[in-house]
Length: 458
Figure 1: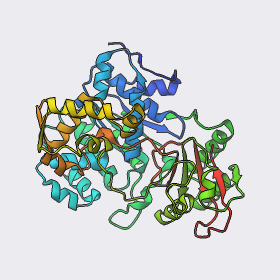
Figure 2: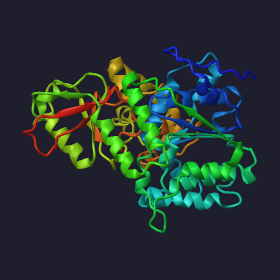
Figure 3: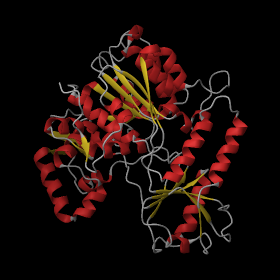
Figure 4: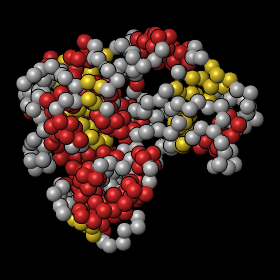
């Protein structure tokens, strides 16, 4: 088996030595990868997956878990951009299942016999705690975990409380008594930990650091690799961020000093001013490239979006979309486009192909792309799986499909990842997403008479 990775990106991406060490590691290696912003974490994760397949693993032997739906979507886009010479690897990449921790927990419990309606009534944390408890059994989930040979975990620094416990329980089960039976690649950035505040241990204190817990559990067999070269930001911003990261990562500096350093960092970012007050007039001045306007709370995001939109959705200017915390993901748009006018309660593959072809004939390529319509084979496979049928099924029960549309594990390949030209959201909701530029609104959005000042990171 060739140990070199012959996978490349369409844009000619070439990994540096640290990146190549990660993506070309052996199947059973234990890796803890520190990857800051712009260091190619998502690209390397995608290439790591391709290399694992090159080493002989099958898609079902790889488990990929990430913190957020946006991070899942970003990884899927990067996988799709890979240039791979081996057609068999290309096909295997299409069959990889990449899920959020919440969706994977839901799926495992559902396959273990727990009623889906009960799971939907419970919180994500309750479901994840149930999975962690089951992982402590001698043979958790029957033999469904026995085939896993490698686990990839993304955004590890932000696994508060129950999620970190679930990952540790999973890795302990797959590697009993620290035997190297199953490899893993854990990626994250301690300097970007913004969710641990949300979890509290039973005694009311902040939860334990998952990085320290992984080091303690896996011992000297754990390889730690740091990706430090920022390929995305300008040299000035990369240098500023590197200095800030060094401060935030120093344990001898107290929290107050770190907060002061963060304020100085924000104060040094370039400003963009406009003569317009915060309203629809500013919309026409916003850039056409992807941009995030970040706020602290849902309420602030909603007010900013309303002011930028004005009194009419027909206001001219850049497309603006709002994303709030707690939103429930909807079923992929292409499903509605395909099935909304179909009346029978079941559909054969032959009929599906005719419906699919008709949809493609009614719309231009841009519309089809905006719908996120996959190939006919991929669409059929996803629908059969979501409906509870096998991937070799010759018909779909549409009543069963309808019941399962809002299950969090129904369509893992169809997470909405392509952002609007301008996305208004909170800092936390933007986690895992990428933009050409990011802006923080310095004025209070309650006061529409004030002129906005943007702090931009482009």
